[in-house]
Amino acid sequence: RVARGCKDVPYREFAMQIHVARVTAIVRQREVLRSKASRLLGQSQSRGLPPAQNDGDQAMENGFTVLVLDLRERLKRLYASGADQPTMEAGKQREIAAFRARYAQWRDQSWPGEHGYDAWVAAPINNARLVPFGLYDQWTPAFTALFKQSQGQWQAFYQRVRELSHQSKPKRDALLAALNARA
Image 1: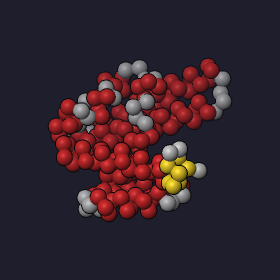
Image 2: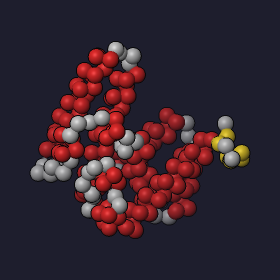
Image 3: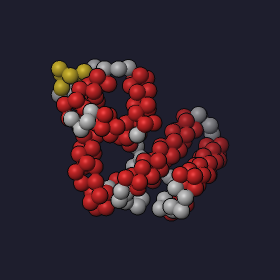
Image 4: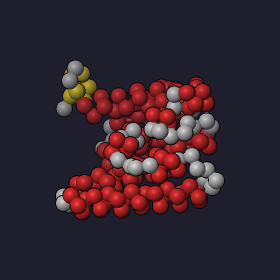
């Protein structure tokens, strides 16, 4: 398949180029305007979260995002299960309760004394609140790590991303997951 308007570029490569462009913008923003952008324009505020002000805050935000993405994935599987409405609603409430328990355990083990996300977690959770935590966020730490592995050299980074784009989706996802684990 080819993307409309880009007849010479296969769709997968075109989609990866778009993703790289978005990640590149984020990496540049984080490298050049890290503290100021985090306070004024950070993703946290669009999600109703406290803004990240330093690397520790950013690490905490990344960890919280992983927890929320896990909840989204669990709910997605529940919705795809074909269960009837009352069963789905009960399952949704169980998953949200389990998310809150996982969050409390993560917070207490990894960030004792930090309660910046407590209000978000305690508020009613619905699809509209989960949307800002899209799958796009899932790989941002991996691409940031890839950029750092490229010693901040854009050409080397682009080359590595191009190589990654030629992998099958399962292999690409495994490579990105490994980078996420090290980020």
